[in-house]
Image 1: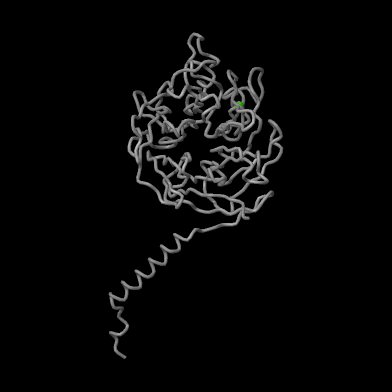
Image 2: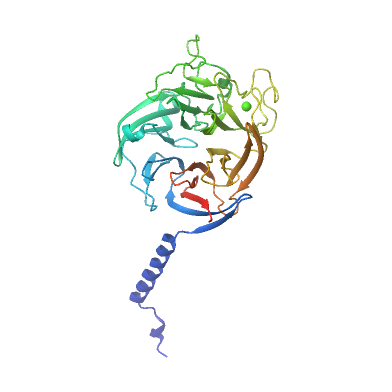
Length: 384
Ligand SMILES: [Ca+2]
């Protein structure tokens, strides 16, 4: 036997490699569909777009495409076929690092006429950084006429607890949820700063009528509610129009609240959590003048993203869906008015990725973003 016959011809190696790579690409393009069983219905989970770096927020355009933020500072448009645009021009510079970067995205209620897109992000500046809100007009693959309409005060040197979610209220004002920057938690109880607050502003950043502390000496006029820790989920209740929020507790003590004008949600005076290093915080769990949460998680789930599901998902109508970063789960809550009456944990087995945001698209499907270095946009639909 000729010993040379076992030497692999480089040309054959190339042919084999090309065929193998083509097979891999075909596999990747074929939508992987995973069956998901909820207590209430059977669903299927599909990947819409992959290769997103720590996606954080999403907003659906009228044509079904979706704006997706990537935390390092990029905004992209995902098309219905799963293709991703190049990063849009016009995104402000962000203080990327730790929990900071480009965060939420929302459309103006009059987007169809004015094309306005709102972004929240960690804004670098004198003395550190803070959460800011910018808006710009969407024009093809760019934001034009970009202006910063809100900057959380004061700036602080930290890469933690920025919040933030952007939710337009029915009256056209904009709620922005703001973290207390971790080391500034006592600020959440005082009115001379925006740390640990929900603020309410007009669409141009000015202060609307009806803010509870506007006009009070020493109080920042944008403040709507106080005593929050780090809120990364918020949604308007479909019937009442009130702002429901959740926030990360410390070790234990994640909460759901309804953010109401002038109310104090207690952090860091009352909490159901402990210090990360052990030990109690504040004065206990209850105090006069401070709200009790509607629901709490001990241990913490690390909640992010929040959605009230509508009738297009039969069996889940009126439920609250919340992502869990820590447990790689989608949390489904059944409500009776303002009471949580049942909780189901989903997707841990089927997905196994940190869930950062939850939304319902124009097609009625549930969309998820996963907070991974190679994160994904996923679609969850009833199996039938
Ligand atoms: Ca609280």
